[in-house]
Length: 226
Image 1 (spheres, helix red, strand yellow):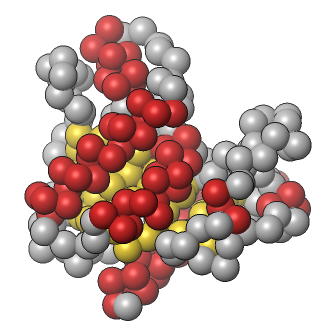
Image 2 (image 1 turned 30 degrees about the horizontal axis):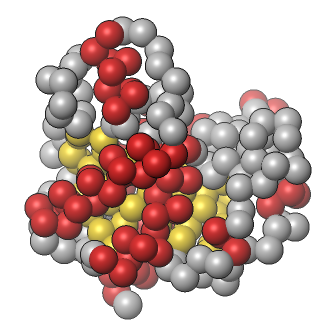
């Protein structure tokens, strides 16, 4: 069951949406990307798809996006320490509310924030692993400015789902990186940063989203079975 999006939340309250049953084997805590909110079509598709596979999915918004929702004006992302603070608070809240294992992650920037906190949160709570939906391995057009240092030392299982032609890290680029053995990569054929393929590929966005959901579901099942 999904909680429908509202146009705004009271100041001081973190906007949140929940899909799936409280009886699910684990709760996925997913953060949005830098420029689109938690109820973007991509986030909604992934959340509803994962809930249909039996998972409880909690989406939330960082403070800057909540301000933008209230004001109707775009806002730049907060600095990383603030983003980490909000995600950590959400994990702590769900650790007490869900009463079961957690898997944390998100879209692009949200997945990056989760990955930076993953090892530490896995020590403090029953966080089994992470899920990144289009990881920003480097800024657009700046392949030398890698954001992979912590990924080389990752101790906790992490699945990164990535479009093969993602401008933030193509398959050709990423396969040259030295990533920890705990990290799995799942590739979406001809996909961009939101997994959308070109028409000429013969694939559809729906097919790639379904493939991403299937790979995420398989990964999560392995985490709760271990």
